[in-house]
Image 1 (tube, helix red, strand yellow):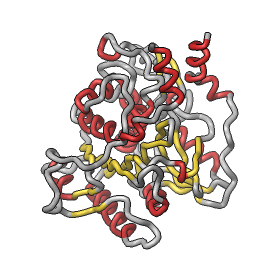
Image 2 (cartoon, rainbow, N blue to C red):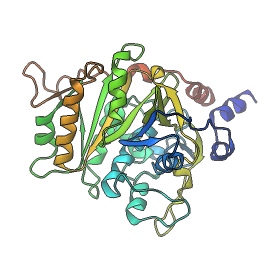
Image 3 (cartoon, rainbow, N blue to C red):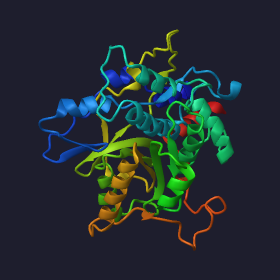
Image 4 (cartoon, rainbow, N blue to C red):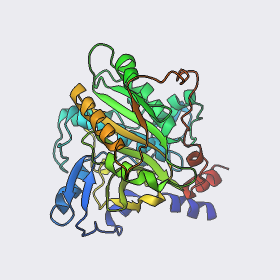
Length: 365
């Protein structure tokens, strides 16, 4: 009975989310920023909720085919950062194929591009970015199946998986050592012709807590039109951060367990549970763990040039300490990134023993 209670406390359901109590979005004069879009909480509440519900929301799932044929059939308790990685990449795919202004409407037959994007994340082994693919590719990054990931690990795995996505044809670049090297992106990722670029930047913004000097810079990143948001978390959990209002970060929370979904014969997917249809979660920016990965999407070379201009301008802001360096070429004193990787993974986050992790491990004894 004790184990059953522990399991139930770790497993929320979608019905719980629909009918549970959620804090309404604040009525404030502060602007609301969601992935490069500015809204008014006083006059555009419906627009805010429509925009947020149009993001793909990936949560724990249960009863999917065993990972690796004999592995877990649920990611409850260990897959939250993997789900956050799915969400930030799904946002890039939505921007790539449908555009940032696309909106999801419940109950309507969806565009083919949308269906293809969603099918790329369905919980089965042959989907490009399924929990199965991410977990198995993570073995090459030193993570056993069922082990907690940090932001850097999931970024590296997504980069490797993107190579097999011939439909989207995106370049995924993971900037290491707190440095974005333009030459590396142009030479290594894009070769001759420009491809839509997903730029993931793993960072550590403090030791045990986020350094307050970085807070304004982080908030500015959500204001960029190229913003894909941030994956990271706070002690006990990982979240996908999509914006801010005042001193609060707005995020999608993967910590609820829903049944796995099976596409129909024509490829259509029952998609209600892949969209967050309640007011979004919020937390004070000071609660953020310092280990994060920031994401940006540049569809064209002009978008990338404009992003570089914004970053350089932001670095001159005396009130905002730069989170990373933007350089034209790799400094000579840097070692080859393939030989020496100095970017700290989210090791501290991965050692967090959240309530779900504890319950999952007790159940598995």
